[in-house]
Length: 202
Image (cartoon, rainbow, N blue to C red; front, side, top):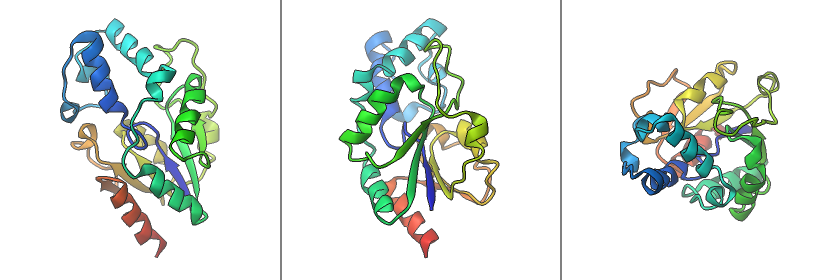
């Protein structure tokens, strides 16, 4: 089987780190549990300049490398790879984060995954002239059996795969989102994802 896995907030605790950055730079003390929207500018009540500064800082190499692993992520993904499955990290990070992102994967025992940088969210405005190494046309030629994603804004990237099983990593910003179909399942953690995958393999 082929697995699509999002990076931020599926593999690592990006939003938790951003709460600390918003507090540090702007005095915005918003608890992680209160992030009810994927739009961090709205979640932290930032103006355009503040939001741009937050996103640039959050994508600095030393900050990216500091993100904590989501518990169980590397263990479950390595189990899948050991079983002969293919794991593809499809991230919305710009290509400028490539070195730090691969280093993070290496440091967390995930050197065997494949990673592609796809412009999911049109974020060129905060990292000028940012590039991505996977175009939408090429992405839509790819096939996956299972997707692991936290962002409702990314669900549109699954419409071309009607048989795809989507495991929605349960986060505060997606709890009020209606899931698009019966092939979508909420998963509280990687233990639950492992259980769901085991059911599919039976």
